[in-house]
Length: 213
Image (cartoon, rainbow, N blue to C red):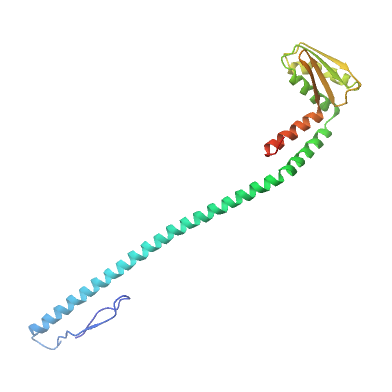
């Protein structure tokens, strides 16, 4: 009888030379010992093969894990570099486009203000003047003679918005442009206009976009 070690990927098949005659009634001690030795060799070979397979699997898993970690670290570095590049290009784009963005916004603002009614434009200029005269009790507001009646209609509501004002005199002045007014108080003269408001907005946009005022 021949004993074959089962074929294993890491261990070639071998034939053990121990034989016992199946028809023999009496088995010699030497043959029995050889058979036991062969069986022990087979078990040892199997154990050795299992150990080799286990070691190979452990090494494979360790290398795979190391490769995964290194791959993640490499991917993370590449992603960080890509994000930094995108941020740099975005910042460069906005830095170059800032003047155009500001001009587009201001064009829209001018269009909106231009579409406002005359009453609202004049009232906006008056509010601008009155806001700068806070704390003053007696004020004189000079407006274009064609706008005086319109402003006088708004005096009561305007004084409610600025309760610190006791007296607000509206005086007609032909030299003052239509959408402009001047406010005279004890501390000086302040001019308010729609154009001035637009310029203030434009300056705020330039500063917000990183430009110079």
